[in-house]
Image 1: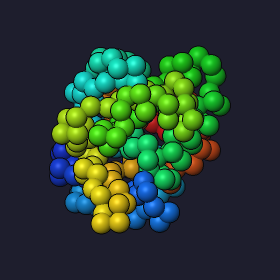
Image 2 (image 1 turned 90 degrees about the horizontal axis):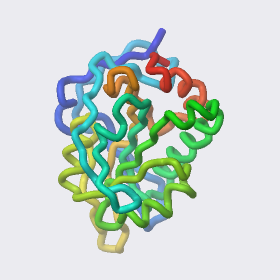
Image 3 (image 1 turned 90 degrees about the vertical axis):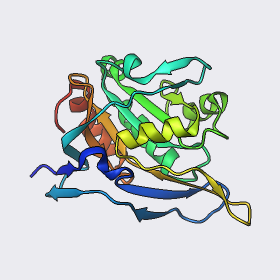
Amino acid sequence: MRKKTALAAMAVVAALTLSACSGDSDEKPTSKSSVAEVSAEGDTKPGTVLHRPFTKPDLVLTDTKGQKFDLRERTKGKPTLIFFGYTKCPDVCPLTMSNIAIAKKQLPKADQDKLQVVFITTDPERDTPALLGKWLPSAGDPSFIGLSGDFPTIQAGARQMGIGIDPATKEKDGTVISMHGAQVISFSPKTDEGYVLYGEDTSADEYAKDLPKLVRGENP
């Protein structure tokens, strides 16, 4: 049975799960649940098909070339995966980008060209457009789109998708902690709505299995 999730409108402000990523420590990331109304049926597929798709956030940020990037306009009618994270994340963020990159390479060339993968930083104070431009090709793929901007704008955009993010904080020992939802949301090229959600433990093989359908705007 396909796994489906019903999410409350606006996902009760800061939905789903926040992952604590420490950029300056060897400790494993922890996670905490934030408030969200979620009900699911079955648990056999990595992709969660949403009963109430998310509207693509109205975000105008800065890309790795220092140019303004209108998220809605630039990805309109294109299969798009959106992930919020940051470059100094020790594991979850680079692993997610790597898994998607591996899966993307298994698509036919024409479908690779169609797929848009957007990485939006949750730590814009440190993740400048130039830094994102250097990090993404090594962590994921040169074609991946990296976006930065002011934190309140990014946080508001994430909340429109039910993704909770908090400002990065520094501990007494100098460790920097960033709390952010680690979900990847797939937007349909047919409706431009976010209709499938993937958790942080989704493997490259699982992405590879679903991507052909996502590119066509079909349910995985």
